[in-house]
Figure 1 (cartoon, rainbow, N blue to C red):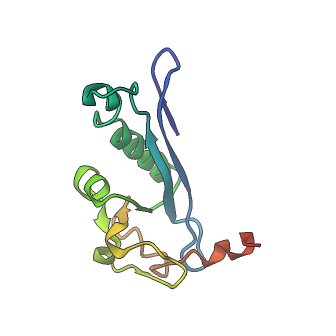
Figure 2: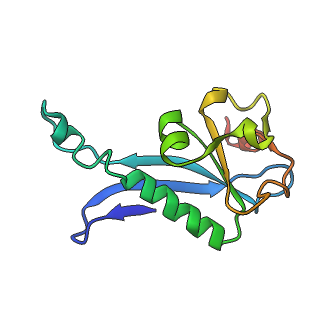
Figure 3: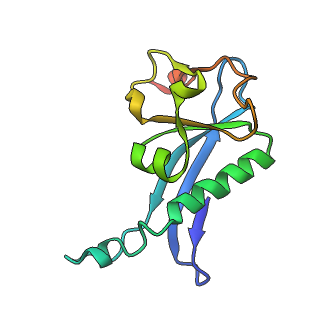
Amino acid sequence: MVAVTNEGFILGHGIFSALPMGNDANHVIWLNSLAVRHGEKDNHAEKRYEYQRKGIGTAIVKHGLEIAKSLGFTACMTCGNPDVYKRKMGLKNYRELGIKKDDSVEDADECIFAIELVPNGFDGTNRILSFSYYDFFQM
């Protein structure tokens, strides 16, 4: 997903992909990457953050979650800054939703977040976050 101005100027992007949990890859989506353009490089904060801290990232995520829900996904997970994902976007720490992680997940517990897009959105999963299905990519 890409956020652009009416003139086609790219402001930011969000990348989502299916996240298998158990034998099911159709319930949960993972927010892989979220980025919003910096402003011009100079010493003034108002220029450095010309596009950031304006709600663009939040809008990208919220729109992405709406699309994910319309495609049948029931939940979303991500890893990142607690101030952004918990406070600004309303995601919960994954443990609050009864999710566990296995040894393939090296991210810190306080940086992993989840949100149910529908009530009981994780019920069709095994509630275990694992990246072990990516092992075949390793050389």
